[in-house]
Length: 285
Image (tube, rainbow, N blue to C red; front, side):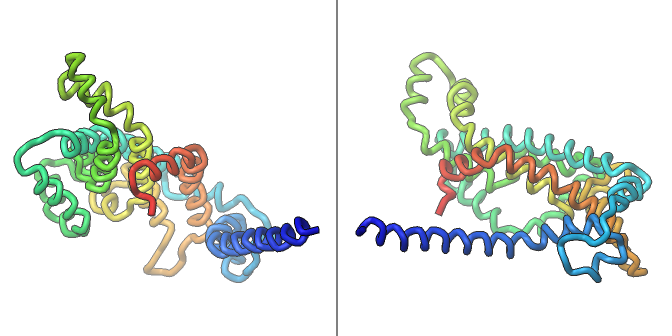
């Protein structure tokens, strides 16, 4: 009898928390659900029909939007994928090397250099965009993907370096000493010992790099000037006509849904690694 009376309040609390979570999820997810629903509505009903279930279902927004801009929308997605993959390779290579140096090697002014690197986290990206643009313009690589990819090979993402430093500091130094006794030099210790052990943090770096590069608009707008080099965010902007006010909202929403799909797939495939990486790099609260 006592067990039954204790179980009932516990079940009520459980279902109460579950209902609260569902309600919060619906509130947070409503804009996304509205976007997906609107992409299947005729243009005339998008802003006049408030419901999420379309009265008139159509795929014309997807079919017409795919070829609306003179190039198939897949070309813009491919440009985004290429830039993201190169950015991931650059960050994994350069940020891991920089993090290994800060975490394991002793060199003059190492603490000052690390503090200076952390200070750059508070430096707005827009402050450095003009001098960077002048440099790349003199190199003759504006309107190519080089300005978007090349800096990634020089450990410019301080957050990624900091994240890897935190992880490497948690690796026992006994592994380094054992490798030194086996005759490994610094580079071999990094490549054969540290780099493989950093896999959870490296996965997190790769995922963050993909998300931030995929969603980047400002830098890509600055450096990419021709339609064939446009990425998906820039192509989406072409559906908006700020001068006449006759924007193609239906096509914009449809292509936005397609652009969001890789992010959803990435999260679904690597959600366990994301949680593991955050938990092992000291980023959790």
